Image (cartoon, rainbow, N blue to C red; front, side):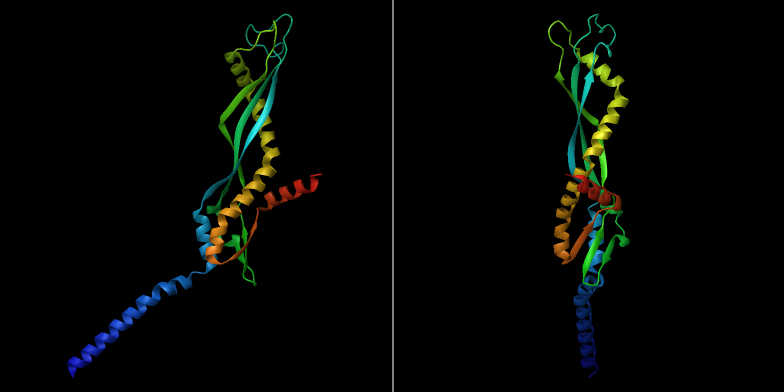
Length: 215
């Protein structure tokens, strides 16, 4: 009889252990709300490059005014036009998301508030093409002369490229927002969430103002 009770106790303990083992993963999964999973999975994407563009400015060089060493000529020379090309990209660092960035509404819709879209110019990626050179008897700039003039006007060039980047800002942000939405859609579907994505306030205001001024 004692042996029978021992077997019954052993079987009950084994059944209890199996039951707990079978329920634990499910219970753990249910304990993590979908909104929390959304935050964790979005943060794991970290800093994403979402859009790129080429910045283009044209530099006019008048040899009579911008001569290099002995380049100035008595009769002057026709100007040289140089196209400077630079690359810029838009990023969003989703690791900056916090619990306050995600708000669940009563109708189970979720609002996701993004960090600011970051624009970055590739400072080491500037190329130049000569669009127009002096003709006839007017001497052309050598490669060394052209490079020296560009270096001497670097501060002005940086300013012009910064202006070009600002002109492209609305387009970059708009493209970045659309790209980010596409990247996040699989997460929304897996978690069965309806998510409304909101840009950072400054980015949203910029897009709203540029849209209202577009003819």
